[in-house]
Length: 150
Image 1 (tube, rainbow, N blue to C red):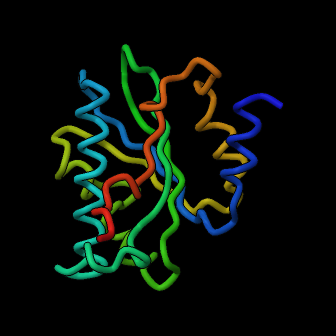
Image 2 (cartoon, rainbow, N blue to C red):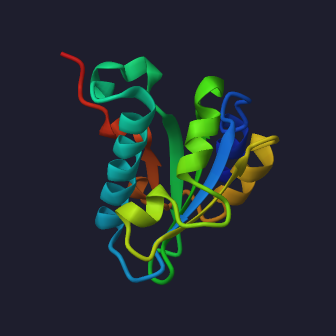
């Protein structure tokens, strides 16, 4: 089984209910791209869960992003788990045809968001540049930005 097939099977979890692409639309380092996504989803959770969102670890937005085109047109494809009762508010933050929260975090950034009716199909698409030699930094788990439990 190829790494891509293994990832797409793993990412076909039906609780991953939102597919998203975040575009930077200008040159950016992978480190800065990763940090911008972490900052964006901190803002998402603050809006969805309130100011004490960091204490609500189990309620936070979870998911995984994979970066592609590291040397030109860097962008990230992601699958997210959004609680059903928060989907409408999440959709308001990332409207399909207007500027949204992502472009507030990353000036000039654009997003594409849709329901992940079939996460396995999007997972296969988002892993197209993942290979055995891919650097671990090309995959981002939103949980990496959660404060450690102490």
